[in-house]
Image 1 (tube, rainbow over the protein chains, first blue to last red):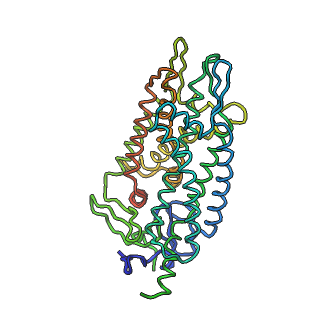
Image 2: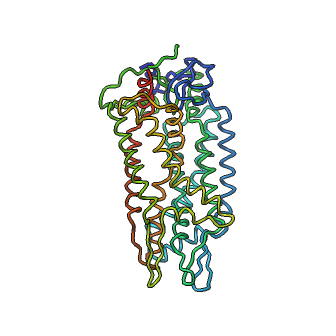
Length: 217
Length: 205
């Protein structure tokens, strides 16, 4: 192996150091000037220069849509002429009243904890990689992988609404209709997923290397 | 340094590795970020193809058979996966309906289809079909957007919400969908970028 690490394995030889560009789709390497990977046809870029801009932009739009998602009703239930509306948090409270604590926990985690945690984590990551930082790259990578993996699970609430709406259509007795918050919430999840996908994980190590090159140990 | 076929970059952190033939039953991890780079499993391609094909066949059951049934006294309502997906189809919600259809059915099926297209011929020692590289690349890009497993958790939550309103029963589509989620997860554990791409390379030449 070429890149056997010295200093805590921070200074592995990267494709960029070797004057090469690696394909993130199929792991093949090419000379630096290559633009399209000849093996898989993917676009090649040694470092995604617009990465952080897109991370911030998508995260911001995602946050904007998360506000109406919480203010407007997610579900509109009509039982024998009476209509009641439930927001995201309202739905969780209703589940607690039904003593379904585990499910209430899942929904609360998926629709409140994950989105808010994601905004914070993405902001922290995008902020940390901009300048030389003393944070262990392993820790940042774990954070990034967690954000990337867990973000999709927020969609649970949208799917719950879809299933309820499809099933509960007993004309007079009870009907459930989707509220506008379902759309806002789905968009918020999609935008934050795009934000996480825009992040170039290779940058986590770049500034660390600059730092350790400047201060010889 | 020259770019050669044995030189592999880590897709996560860009570290270079020189990889020859990978020994059977070993996992090669990136020296820096510990991402699995290559897996020494010669039979992985056959496994992936078999699992993808199984999941695709089960998908036909999902689309054509009832998914969930709800009973409340004399009232009965039945929903197939298709109806679930179409539940936002009225008015301003229509785009959401399309999105849910993509997340739950179209993208998971597209992933299975592209994987079969790209790797199917390899598993029976034939030359790859045209566009195999394109198909394989897109199978990987679509991965985060195929949300069948999340839909299943959504079903579980919906069942609890409806428990005191009515009696629920699951149709054949429900069980085959659950099976698809399991099989797809199993299939994804068999896929490693370097291994499948170098298999495609050696099949071409």
